[in-house]
Amino acid sequence: MSRLASLTPSRAPSTPPQAVHTPSSPLKGSETTYHRKLRLVIGEIRKVVKSWDELVRDGIKVGRGCVDSATEMDNILALPETPERPPITPHFEALYTSRTALESVLTKLDKSLHRLSLLVDQAETLYFEAYAHMGATFCLVEIQWATWTMDHLVNTLPALVSQHNQHLSQLTLLSRVLLSSESTFDESKLALETWLYLSRGGDRWEAVREWEELVDFELAPQGGMEDDDEDEYVSKRGKKKAKGR
Image 1: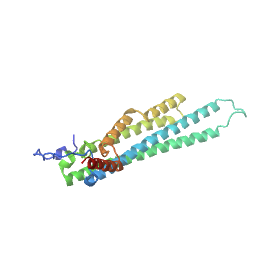
Image 2: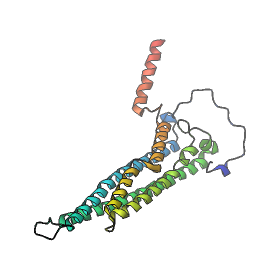
Image 3: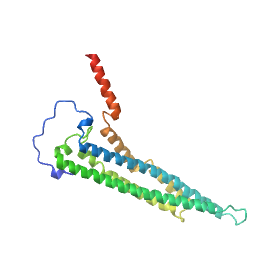
Image 4: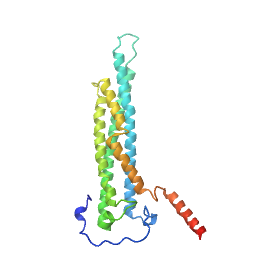
């Protein structure tokens, strides 16, 4: 349901569609300010999503460091106190470093979530501005790029915030196991395996990948070609038509 359904004017005779070819993406010269701004916001959201994936993978590395260092310390402490027993200090320092790094990953994820939320708010603000200046038809009826209206595009964004919020909550719970000195090896191993799974699967992963695929299609000029490729394509098509005359 549209966020502005309650503001949509009553049904009135709509302007009949023009009998011309509708491009899959607005031409460079015909893109409105709202097209360009929304494209930029979505691009920034995609950067946050990419950074999130990288941070989660970093968490696996430092989480494994927590488990390995703690295990080495337990093994050393289980040995008799003799001159031959390996020193525990290097492993303690490595454990401290890994735990600090894991906490840093969580802090960065929290900041990324905050930025994602701000970007979604920015997209929604842009939507309301477009509605106020361009009208309901522009937001609710006209195709923004390929097949979606601006309303449809912006409506896909809030779910990203809730998905990443839930994802961070899951990772935070797992980090508590990895950071705790009371956790057993099996508990830490299970937490690390779950973290690994969440880095490449689960609800958030599947939802985000699906969203990225849809956005790739919707925003890609001329069915996925880059701007330079599009210019080259148009140029070649023009030459072929000229030759055929």
